[in-house]
Image (cartoon, rainbow, N blue to C red):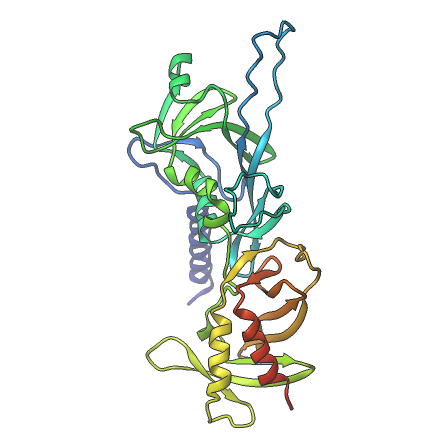
Amino acid sequence: MNRRAATIQGFLALAGMIAAYFTWQREPSLDSGQSYVLDITKNELQSIRYEELDPPAVADPKDTKPAQAAAVKVRDWVELTSTKDDDGLAVWMRLAGKDGGNVALPSGHPMVQTAVPERTVRGNDGAEKMWELFAPFKATRALGKLDAEKLKALDLTTPKKRLKVTFKGVTKTFTLAPAPPGGSDPYVRDDEDGSVYVIARQILSDFQAARTNMTQRKLHGFIVQDIDKLVITAKGKTKEFKFRRFDGRPGGELLSAGTPEKSDQTAGNWHERVFALFPAEVLGKGEKPSAGEPQVVLHIDYYYRNKKTGWLDLASAPGTGAFARSEFTAGWMTLSADAQSLISEGETLFGSP
């Protein structure tokens, strides 16, 4: 290949990469009937904030003082932002704190209400899909500017829910209303120009249940088949294992470094349960359990081809149970009650001489 041909080929490859980048940044077309609420890209989008508002106070008819506009009180909110990490786009979620005892429960109800602080947690696939729904932000239908009677019928006159979308340093606010009786999709009204749109049902339903639907509960961003070695530390002692995949089915077995051809079924069964742990509660970035900083009992490092791919801490805190954190979590996660016995078992298995 001569120099000119190589130059042309290099130019074509560069052009292809640029085209692929912009294809990823923006969906190229709209489906029939769709329109843009905000025609923005993922790089331009900075944050999405959903707010639940308290209804305004009803004026006392006996009050003869001049009426004043009441300040809007935000009762609950969720805010999404994003960063880029080794795995690509990572969506983070800030969740409003909640006071303890603010919901009336029946007498004798077993649940004890506790205050929850404001939290920053990692978003799951649902949070990533939500981020994509706003870059660009599409409507299934554009209704234009409606008169006061129609706005009232759609419950868009007095805001009870709203969206704030920040992009390129600008924040746009939208009044959000559920679908009216007989409908299926919610409506938004641009508070700046008054335009009304019908949007995807998922936007309202997932934001309303964000603590459940959009909170990441996985301990790792990789699957167990992505490793070939792990090192377990307990009571200052370290044990190394090779990981060998099963043929034709998920999972694998642990091989002790001292007996590389013999499967350690006890260690393998223990680690299989550890890798499948699922948190009962996700704490926020930098948040400590009410009893204080958990004490790490076991630490696991994961490797592939001698490169560290992840880690896991298993810990206990006095009177509050078991906890875990990893390279993938925002902070500590509270584990179910039976995880404490799993931690004690691991301490005995790997902390003994």
